[in-house]
Image (tube, rainbow, N blue to C red; front, top):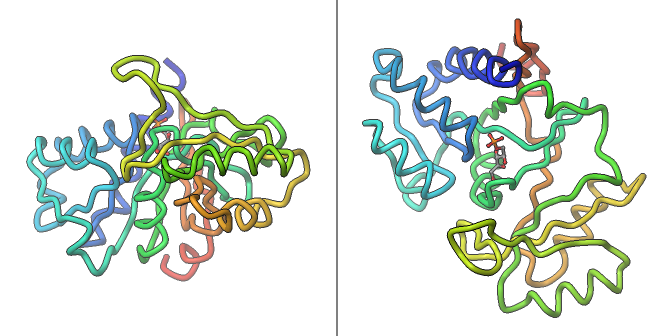
Amino acid sequence: MGVDNARELAVREALKYLIDFEVIGVGTGSTIDRLINFMASSKDLLRGKYFVASSTATALKLRDTGFKVFDISSTDCVDVYVDSADRVDRNLNLIKGGGAALTMEKILAYYSRFNLFIVDYGKLVDSFGGEDFIPVDVLPQSLSLLTNQLRRLGYKFSVRHCGKGKYGPVVSDVGGIIVDINLRVGEDLLEFDRRIKCLPGVIETGLFVGLSDLVLVGYADRVDLLRGRRFLRMY
Ligand code: 5RP
C-alpha cells in the first residue's frame, strides 16, 4: 500500500511538468502505465500534445487510451521525456532496463530537451554498488563472444531469461538480448559505461549518467524533487 500510494502521488505530480511541452517522449513499465492511466483521466490538459513511445507496449497503451503517437523514426525533436527507473542515486544517476526497453529509452532521454523521472522511495539509494546489475542490450549474434570477454574482464553477469510467455532469453525492444552485468564495488560509473559500450556487439547500457533533469520521488504522504542541471535553468 505504501509504495503504491507513493507512486501514485509522484505520477500525479509529474503531469504538472508535462503540460508545458508539446512533443512528449514516454518510457516503459508499470509506473508509466499508471501515468498513462492518469493522463487519460486528464485529457483536457493534454489537448494538442503528441507522444513518442520508447517501446511497443507503451505505444499500444498510449494509442488504446486515445493519444496521438508519432513513430520515433519520423520525429526530429522531443520536448520532454518522462520515464521511471529501477534505481536512482543521490547524484540523479539511474539504472534502467528492468523492462528491456533501455535502448529506445536512452535515445529518447539523450535527445530530449528535458528529462523527468518518476520513482517511489524504495528505488532511491545513496550510491550504486556491488549489489547492482546494469542491464545491457546486446546484439544476439555477438552474445557468446561478448560474454566470454566479460568473463575475461572479471565481470559477473547473467543472460536474462523470461519467466513465462517465451522460452529462452529476454529479447529487447530493438531485438537484442539483455545481459545483466554486475557493477563492481567502487567502480566508477562513467568508466564502467565506457568500458562496456566499447565492446563490439553492445547496443546500449541501462546506466543513465547525467541525463536526469528532475526526479520525482514519491513517499506515502509527499513527493520530493531532486533537481538536475537543466531544471535549475528552466524553472
Ligand atoms: C524499462 C525501465 C523501467 O523504467 C524500469 O524497469 C521501472 O519499471 P517499473 O515502473 O515497472 O518499476 O527501465 O526498461
